[in-house]
Length: 321
Image (cartoon, rainbow, N blue to C red; front, side, top):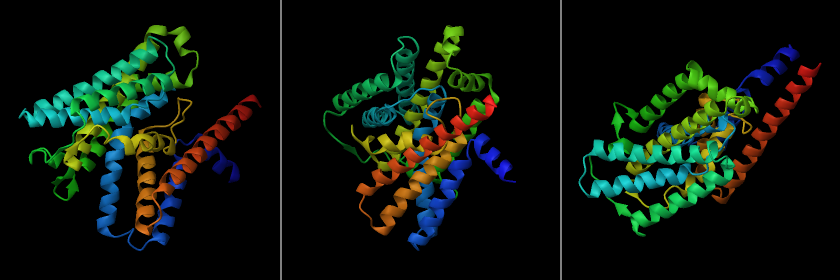
């Protein structure tokens, strides 16, 4: 029995994430009587959806063994572009198309820096992050745009029946990316690239293309997140992505996707986004200082990375026997 349990934890992508989720829900329920109210649970689901949308594409990048630190400011830039175009009375389909294209271009640019120029992903995407922030500042000229058109804001605050639109978008992305990563050749190759350190050596062209595609997916989902975030806030400014910087990476890591690449998945990222949202929600409900949010998130990240490395080391030891 013990061996079966140990084997499950060593081979399940989401075991540790599910345990953390259960513990967080139990602590949340015990900490605040308001946690399980219908209004609060809907708030948690809505906030989880926005964070998941922003984090979803990053999962593909991390699976390749890379990282993208420009997601939050890519989303902010897309939001700024969308808001400016709406002020110029462009139609919503055109505005959304331009926003998605902007995110896609940034993603491809990151992929070329990492895949073709062989820059370290951390350095390359951090540099892109600063460039994108600068462009956003120029686009907005230090201003904040409020009161966007009423036919645009339902993307962030509207409902289809009783279900919030961001939740529908999040679950649509969850389904699409699950199929992409688990049921297509592209998805299998992304996993292979992350798990095989020598893939680039034996298949240089394919690894470059895969890297660019992974970052393109990340840029595209960042754009979707930026559009939803802008509609939800009914406003846009150059710094509106700042609060998501740590959370986006944290959601992927908390979901059990290995920073070393090759292990994890999109379902885990949704779980990670939910865990993170619940932690922040309970801290707010209980009235604990918001400064503790970063502390709590940081500790959980350290825990998940340690568990990932420990599990990998145990697998290597067993493989040698």
